[in-house]
Image (cartoon, rainbow, N blue to C red; front, side):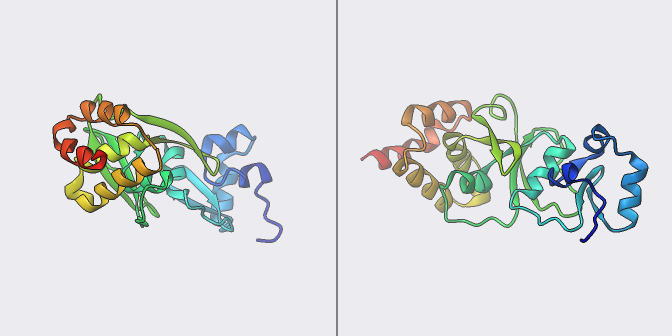
Length: 198
C-alpha cells in the first residue's frame, strides 16, 4: 500500500506481537487504528502482519513463535526443511508436549503430534528459517519419529526418509540408534536399518 504509515522496522519483522510494537514506541491504540484502517491484519490473538506483506513459506511457524507456543517442527515439515522427502505438506507438522493443546487460529493449518519427555526435547535444533528462529528436530530424530508415527504419515514416507537421510549423510547410524533408544523404537527400526546397510 502506498503511504503506509506502519514503520519500516515493524514491517521488516514480518509477523510481530504487541510487545514488539511497544518496544518501538508504538501504542496499542495505534495498532487498533491501523487494524481498523486495514493496514494491519490480526493473524492470531496479539499477532499482526501488515496487510500488504507477502506471507513467506514459514509464515505459520512465525505466528506460532510470536504467540510463544511451545512446539518443535517435526515429521513432514522437518523432512522438507532437511531435504529428505519429495512430499509437499500443505500443513505445518509440529510436535507439542504431551498434555498441551494443538494451537489453532485463523490462517493456521497445523497437524499436531504429542510426545512426552525425554522424547519431546531430544534431538532439537535451533534454526533460523527466513528470519524466524524456530526449533526443528534433527534429521536423525525426524526419521525415528517417522517410524514412530508411521500410521499417521505412512511407512513409505518413513522408508524414503531413512534412505534419503542415509544417502545424503544427514545422520550416522549411532545418531539414529541414540534417537531410536530415546523414543523406544530400536527394535521396530532394526530390520529397516539392517536392510539399509546390507
